[in-house]
Length: 221
Image (tube, rainbow, N blue to C red; front, side, top):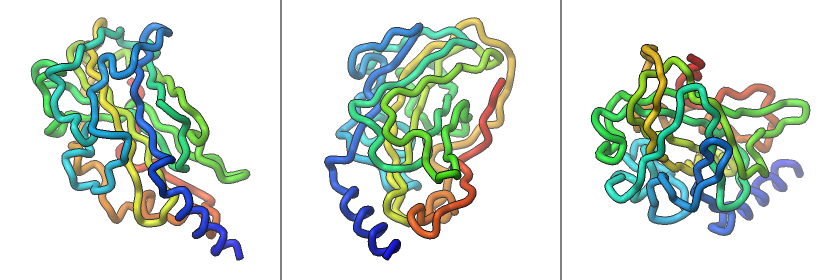
């Protein structure tokens, strides 16, 4: 019975009505307008092919030429706001990607990305901590070099086992007052694989007793 209920629930929650997009940036405690310094995307639908270049900044997010770049201080608290609440259970993570030149000109390619924040699950009872939330804040590491970055947030819907959905947005930022740290970096796509147990897991039955957020370890600076 538990399995039947889980399958029914997963199918029911797979509709487009459960989709969402991170469309507002929080800087200095102020929430900006929709898509201010956030690259516009084609829709609020998720990316499902982990080998696609759309994993970087979503479908339609490869170019930032028409998007403003916001200045943020190293060590400050920033965040993203959704146009909805997290509807599909799964982890959340935030990455910074160092732009070779300007954030607006970068297509997000290359091994320039490192993780700065993640939100996983609790287990008594089992629950993903991002579920039902719409606002997420985190700290920009104080020791990263100053310069232009893409600030990328992803939430992964795991409601259908083996078919993860990635909800992705990228903001364009200039970091000031930074340091000289050199975090280990990854490429996107390439930072996760379709066979990653954290992506293929059935979260409904049996109930997980452990869970690792996909991707590299968090750089704390």
